[in-house]
Structure formats: C-alpha cells, structure tokens
Image (cartoon, rainbow, N blue to C red):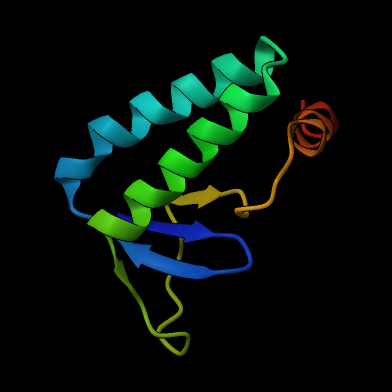
Length: 88
C-alpha cells in the first residue's frame, strides 16, 4: 500500500499496518465529528507517526499512485471540517 502525506511524500506500508491505520482513521473522524480539537490533533499525529514508523519513504523521483492520501501534519480541525464540507 502506498500512502501520501500531503506536503511530505509517499510511504510504502506493509499490509500488516492496515488494520491499525483504519482504526486511527476512524478515531480521527470521530474527533472531527465531536469537534474535539485536542483529540483531533492527537489522532492526526498518531496516524502520521504510524505511517512514518511502519512505512518506508519513497524517493521523490519514484512517484507511484497513492492508495491513501493523508492530511499534512499541520492540518487543523477547522481546516479538516472545511475540506470535508467541500467534498461532501
């Protein structure tokens, strides 16, 4: 699986990380829905940390189609809400 962290790069992740990734993504969405800024930031950071620690960063010249696109590390709750509203 290839995951892209916006403004950072692409990571190749093993299939074994997928269940944990999905759980963190679900928790991130729960925090967004609950309007929990601190919880949102915590889950966003945990999600990105998982990708960075479990994945292997691909060199910039090795562009591949991403299976998953993740927010940048500085995405706020308000920005996330705007993004989801625009694409709903």
